[in-house]
Image 1 (tube, one colour):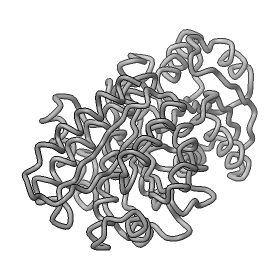
Image 2 (cartoon, rainbow, N blue to C red):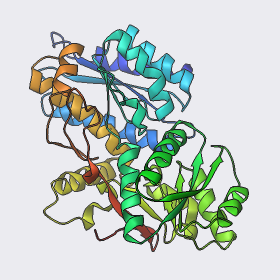
Image 3 (cartoon, helix red, strand yellow):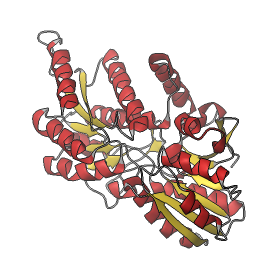
Image 4 (cartoon, one colour):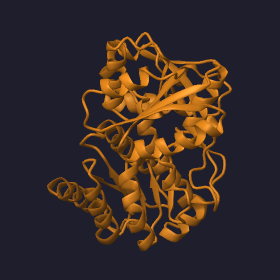
Length: 380
C-alpha cells in the first residue's frame, strides 16, 4: 500500500498550496492500473486525467471551484482496487469516481460506490458493468457487444460463415466470450471452435493448432496485451493463413510493437482516435480527436491511445454533469450524468438515460487493419 500512501501525500501537499480563502476544491477520485499487467491501459488514463484536470483548472475550474483529481494505482490487482476505492470514498470523500481501468476491478468496486451513493464512471469494457443498469455505475469504454457487432458485420461482408474464437480467461476475456457465443449464432454464423488461454500464458500453439484443424473461415481472438501478440506470432509460426480478428483491447501501437511483423494484415474494431487523421472532415469527433492527440503527445512525448481517451471521457463527463446541474454533490452528479445527450468524447458520442449507462452506439467503432506497422482505416 506504499504507493497509495505516497499518492495521497502528494494530494495533501497540493491542497495545502491552495490560496487562503479559496473555495474548497471539488474532489474527484480515480482508480487506474498504472502499473501491473494492464499498465498499457492505465498509464495513458492516468496521464490524461492529470492533463485534463490541469486544463479544467486553467479554464477556471467548475462552479468557481478548482478540481482536485486524486489518482490511485491499483497495480491491476482486484483487491487493491477495492482498497483504493474504499480510501477514496470513505477517507477522501470524493464526489465521483473515474475507473477502475479493467473489467474485473470495475465489477468488484461497483458495490462499493452503490453503497456509498457516489457515481462511478468505469473505463473498462465488459458489458456486465452496466447491464443490468446499476443507478450509480456508468462507463466510457465501448461495450463488447458493439465491438463484436462490428467484427461480425465485416465477416458477413466477406462471406464468412464459420467462425472460431480464442479468448483469455480473465474478466475482459470471459465477458467477451459470453457475447461472442451469443452473437455469433444469432448473426447466422456457425461457431466451430472455442479455445481459451490464460493471461500469463506465453505460448498458444496448442490452442491455435486445434483451431487450425477446424473449418473456420476466420478466427476471433479476444484479449489484451501481451497475450494477443503471442497469438499473432504463434499463428505465423504455424503457417496459419485463416484471417484473424482481434478485439478493441489491442487498439494501440503497443500491440504492434509487441507483435512486430506478425501483426500485419490483422483486423480489429477500434475507436476513432486510432485513425483520427484518416477520418472524413465531416466526422463530429475529428477535431476533438486531433486536438487531444496533439495535447497528449506534446505533454508526454508519446502518442495518445484510445485507452487514454477512456480517462478523458470519464473526467469530462463528470465535469459536464457538474456544470449542467450546477451542483457538485454525488447525487446531483449522478442525476445529471443520466441526462447527458449528444456529448462528443474521444471514445464516441455519449447519450445516457436511466436505461442506458454506456451511452454509445456502433458509430463508436471503425474497422481497421494493420499495414506497414500502423493502423489503416477500412472503407465501410
